[in-house]
Image (cartoon, rainbow, N blue to C red; front, side, top):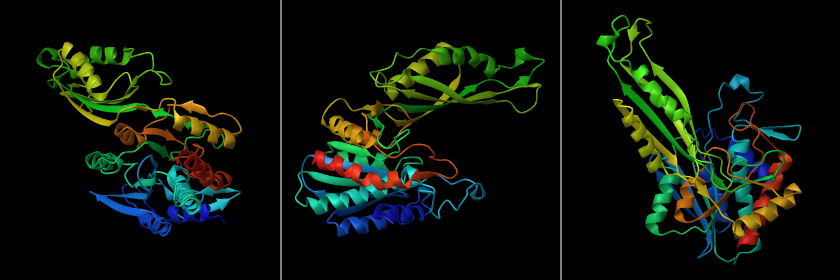
Length: 374
């Protein structure tokens, strides 16, 4: 078996369901220290983070990843134990194979090979890992980024190993992500009997016009390669379960995925203003998952375009689609960020998997990126 396959299997075998790391980072740190990296373990709250560096000064290139995984779901639904990795017909199965223990293992192997070949390389090569990407993302890279800002730790380029490819390795280069903002709205009414509506105040009826306006709103026409901003209601709940009771309150959960035309404070102000205009008595709790980021044309995109084209046989699609990633916390430090990783076909699913051929090609892909940047 190859080095990267061995390491990926070792990582999958550790049941690091977020925010647990289950010893993944200790294993990786031991290898990177043996390769000459300085490793700093950052235990923040219940979250393990690893910051490993080789070299000094600028430019600073960071390989960003996470060792935590989502829960596997029912074990009996898997063809094999999700934490007992198996190779079947050239495919590696196990929780985290694609998201993203395969990429993390490839980062480690690429970093080892690079510093062995070029021990006196220019600038700094760093590996940043967290165990809180799949969870609340509070004490992971979000917290580490605040520490970096306080320290004055600069980052020039960041490569995140999220599974970005669509049909074949290297066919997509992610150059940005939308921001994500979630809201939980509680509209206050007065409970009463449906036969005596004049003695009650129905929050469903009161909120309906505001929700209709909110969901019908055209926020923008998009931004460069970003799609238009979208608001989606994910849940509405009210009532006691009895059909003769006017409820006393209504709860609505919604999320906005937004492009760089907006930031979270402006969106919050817009929505709160709309609710006030409709005369609602309400409470609104916000959760800011992260602002959008976008990497313009420049050396990082040029190098990535060339390298991915070599692997995929054609220039990659350059996209800002998908959900969120930890790159959203690194970009505000002034870093240019891209995401490059294996095929995104089975992440978070039963029988998550990655093609062994793609996994074994990943270290070379990452090493070429590093070589052309440092």
